Amino acid sequence: MIYVVATLTIKPGSLDALRAPAAACVAATRAEKGCIAYELFHSLADPEKLVFVEKRQTREALTAHSKQPHLAAWREASAPHLVSRTIEIIHPGRIEEF
Image 1 (cartoon, one colour):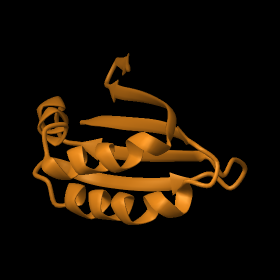
Image 2: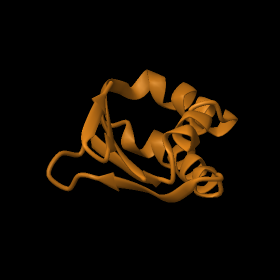
Image 3: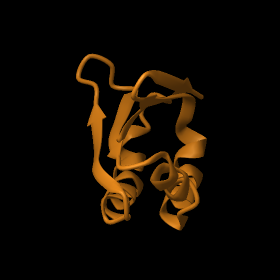
Image 4: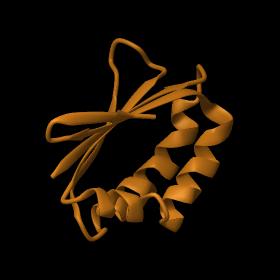
């Protein structure tokens, strides 16, 4: 089992534009094979910070997720609003960072 924590910083005022595309991505991702949990959190302290937390059965399930059309749609919709993104993939015994 692996966990993924993706922290996004968005441009000020972008949250409303990202709500619908994020909701669509979350719903479709939860239906993927190998997805145990997929949540999106919005920081109360920093209105420009979003955090995706996911739990996957395997690294292969995560790799398959990265190729899904709904993730491509999310990336396209969020690109104009994105300032930065950090992704940590947490395996038993090690962490990958992107």
